[in-house]
Image (tube, rainbow, N blue to C red; front, side):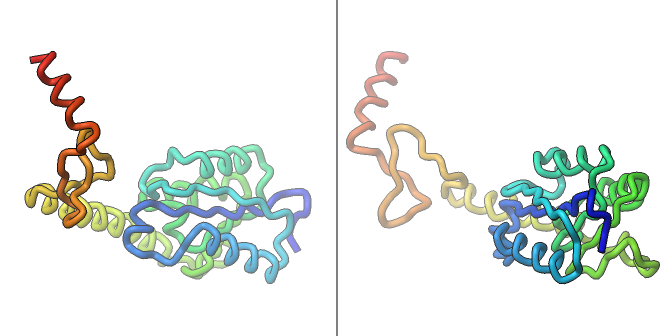
Length: 194
């Protein structure tokens, strides 16, 4: 049993890139895994901190910052994530949390699927996993950029917004056609301006 006056921070994060890559780690799924682990290992006073739709490369995440405020205020005994990449995909910043911030504040860190537990002595591979997570984020970003660039070169739309006066072609969702209702307004505005 852990210090009952401190909380066990259960941190969940899912980025848009994770969703696009088909990673099976929805926020609800992560919450279920974390709560079950906490219950089975007798961690008390659990509190969820969640960032949904945020990249692990950025550390300016509302849920993470709220958790770190609790850590620095001395109110957290343990931080638990599903895996190391949920905490972050920036090698230096994630390493700073695990190697400096958490130990300075007496916080134990556990990444369930990666077998990381700072209360144990066998965490030699944690920095390597951390580096790999950053590499994965960069690689995924490059792939997404390449796909969008290829779509743009083929004349396909690369974002979800349609310009006023256009609608998607029913035969090709990447192609736009004039909207019969709003296109005349766009033409009229163009005539006034030009």
